[in-house]
Length: 164
View (cartoon, rainbow, N blue to C red):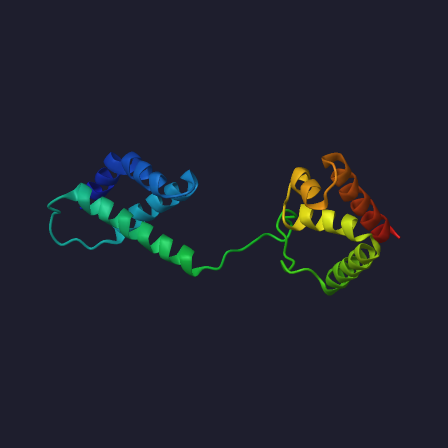
C-alpha cells in the first residue's frame, strides 16, 4: 500500500504544487505544503483502496491550505526591526510639534490682525474660501492685479512673522 501511495504522490506532485502556488504567496511555501501532503499521505492508515486517489490527495492539500491560512490570520504581523521604511512612531504629532504649530498659528493670527483690513480680507477669501483674484477684486472694488498684490503682501508678512 505504501508503494501505491508513493506512486500516487509522484504522479500528482507537480499538479499539487501548481494548485498550492496559485493559492499562496510564494512558490517555496507551496513546495513546503506539498511536502507536508506527502507526509500526511504516508501517515494515513488506509484500510481499503481509495475510490478516487487524486481527489483524496487534493483534499489533503486543501485542508493544509486552510490550516495555513487560519494560522496566518491568528499570527500577529511582524515587522523586522532593521526595516527603516516602516515607521514605528505614533501617527499623532509629538507634543513639541503641537506646541510649535500652535505658536506658528498664533504668530500668523497676530500678523494678520496688524495688516490693513483689505489686505487681510483678500488673503482670507483667497486661502479659506478659495475665491479667485477676479472675485476678490470685485468684492474689494480694485483691479484684479491689485487683489493679487494684496494677497502677496499678506503672505509675505506672514512668512516674515513666522521666520522671526
